[in-house]
Length: 185
Picture 1 (cartoon, rainbow, N blue to C red):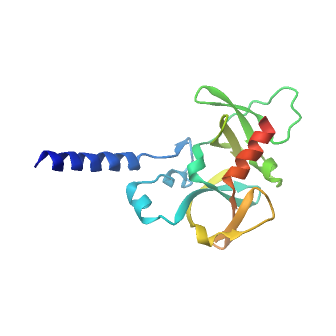
Picture 2: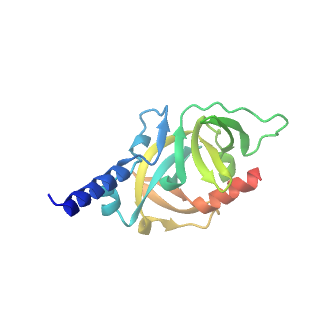
Picture 3: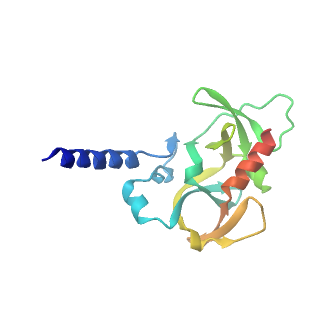
């Protein structure tokens, strides 16, 4: 094998290893499919027109949040209330990898009935990580962009799709981040 052949196969092997690393960490998660939210080189090569989403249960409704905006899903987090806080979207603080971060109820952000939940979906804002409290995660779903029907009912929801006969509202990542930052800062 020549030097160039050897370096080419090493580059391919390194690229394969890079793309096989999980992009979402799942800590303490029950068997709900959230673990399947990792991408590899084959998926990237064959699904260029679709996006991977994580399905969230909020109240009685299903929402989809782009997996690329999620860092971690944590099960059964302990939320520490902020003294003197009257509630609202900001539910308190949690410990995330030794760092104290804000925990926000996604139900309150969306204006829907439902408990904040004890599962935290960690997303990053321009100022650092934020925990979105949800009732549960239902797994991963790959959605083709052309399947998303546009909606103007909410600034946070950019459209909807049908999945297994049920409507899934697709969240606007940028609008959600703007709303979270407005709650906090």
